[in-house]
Image (tube, rainbow, N blue to C red):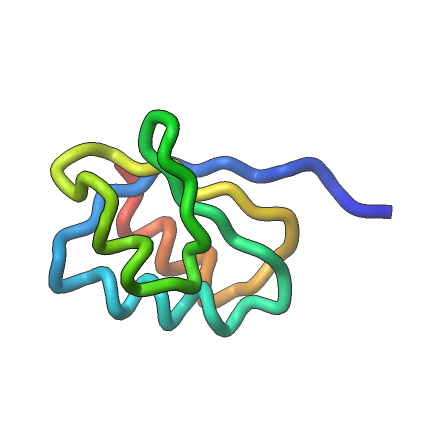
Length: 77
């Protein structure tokens, strides 16, 4: 049985996008990132760059990866 969706707010700069996508890609579960109505696959660098990086973003996923959790904690909004 799958757990509940986890939602965390983060803040990214343009230079941190590649590190975020790399951390998300290592997860063996789906990771979405969104701002307002724009939802993109967090494993897509072009999708993440297309978001408004001046605002806090919401990451939504269902699973656990230690490295990914550490990245999110370091960039919590």
